[in-house]
Length: 367
Image (cartoon, rainbow, N blue to C red; front, side):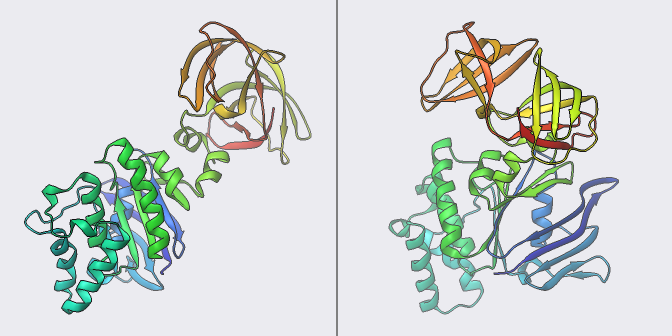
């Protein structure tokens, strides 16, 4: 399977940069998610790799072949890039059966009938849609249509499969099921998948790596758990994770080696950094994931329960502490009465210090 390389890729519409100086390498057989809010440039990036959009500047390589270069005017057309594209709307031919929809592209490629029949059988068996071969798209559920669209896209055996929010039209339960199917399909097909979504849960659960963008600029490109636990900046920290990370204002009182005395949540706490500290500003933002805040009956910072959201497996608790509101996730079916007193504690070594001006991460450690 091919490696995809983007070097200094920029796309401008007038004076606006939809994608600004993007550099990334998509490894062989990876499942990459382009993630970010609407208008961040993720779909434009996907379309440029596929050849459906022409970059303003830069180079794109697929499998060792240069498919675009603004320097020497190389621009290989989409049909020569050996890629498959799965759109948000499945675009199935309504007057064709499932069998005909899957076979249509192969007939255009002049495959012989026996080879087409074998490929259709192979794909429908893999995607568990053999029993729907003679049905029309209008006779299928959303999930079944999705699988037919995937089968049709995979039929010619593309080296790379591009997917632009393919699950957004499905209900929540079916979306969860199809995520599992797509992850399994990635292993079964041994292809490189490049997937666009604005849903960070999809990115977390599906990807081998996530490319998070904002306003056309790459914010971080890393495995999802790395991005979750070690975000490069405040934007990444805020975008990844639900419930979102707690961002608590803090003031640096003293620094001694790797230890920082912090005024936060109405108390003085000690932050122990994992590595040597850079020069710290006086005001910092302390980032803490909700699952790293514990609620105790004993010692800790005194607080009062503002609200609880029990969900069976876990309970999300909002707690008022000093002049701040923090969120904790408590595992198990535990509920807390509103306004009941609790004590906050911190667990683990994944607390973060951010610069409130630049947004950059300054340190990781424990409280």
